[in-house]
Amino acid sequence: MKKILAQIIKVILSILLVMIIVCAGLIFYVYLKNPNFVKSSGLVLKGAIYSAINLEDKAIEIYKRAGKINSSNPIVYDAMARSYARLEQWGKAIAYLKKGIENVPEEERFYKLIFYYYMSEDLNKEAKEYFEELLKKNPTNKLVAKYLRLIKGLEAFGGLDKKSKDGR
Image (cartoon, rainbow, N blue to C red; front, side):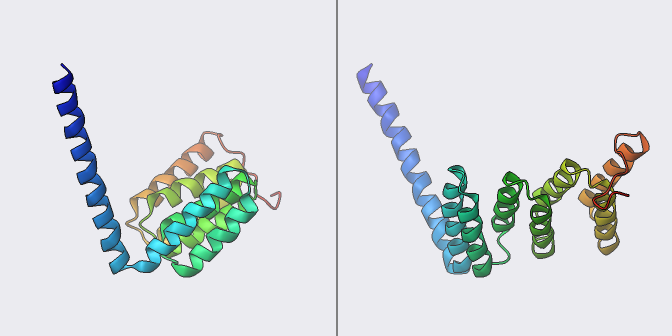
């Protein structure tokens, strides 16, 4: 029984070693291809540590540095938006998601988060206008169309009051 257990552990460790080597190879490949992506991702990780201990201002400062290194790294915009949301600075969170959509339009989570943040602040009119604007720019974007339908559906069924940030 001990021999079988030892063999199983040996196989598991071998598999883990191969996985580590593959991951290291992928990281090295990505670094060679785009070193700024790796550098900015490292800064985001550092910022996430500050965010985890509720030092959002310090995290945001680090995320901004990461964004300067690589503006096409989607995790930078995601992290910035989430930190501002934790501080309940919804306008800034939305602004960073809009920047993220401009720079990395294929990143689906940005659309979901911006929808959520608009709804969190009852900025229904602004949400509708923003998604309509996005759909005009890219009429084939199914994700934008989905959220726009959701906004219009909620509005039609009275699920949204028609309040906006300017009180209209």
